[in-house]
Length: 149
Picture (spheres, helix red, strand yellow):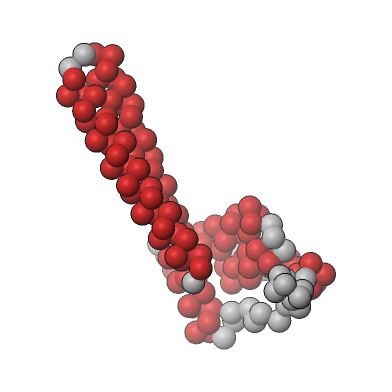
């Protein structure tokens, strides 16, 4: 829930920024001088990139949730059995054990989106978010291929 609130706050800030920057780009374009118009067009590119980025991240998040719901319905969502430290963080040793299991599972069936999803969760638990994201993207790609989309 904390991540969802953070995402919504960041989206709100980015939307405000996009509107502010976009209005400045429009003002520059209305100026009429070629250099200022060119600068205004360049400034308008920033909100376009911002909107694209928001859309991409939201789509990624919604798709992850969809995959989680499917796994839960199938009874294949990985349970949270990880040991925790006194401050509530996942024990590194525990995360490494689960990661090794999930990696072997994925290597045994590399075309299974469910295995890639569980591997992505294991990467996240091991605090390797970059590889976790790549594994989740692979799971999404395989899921889409399986569904024929």
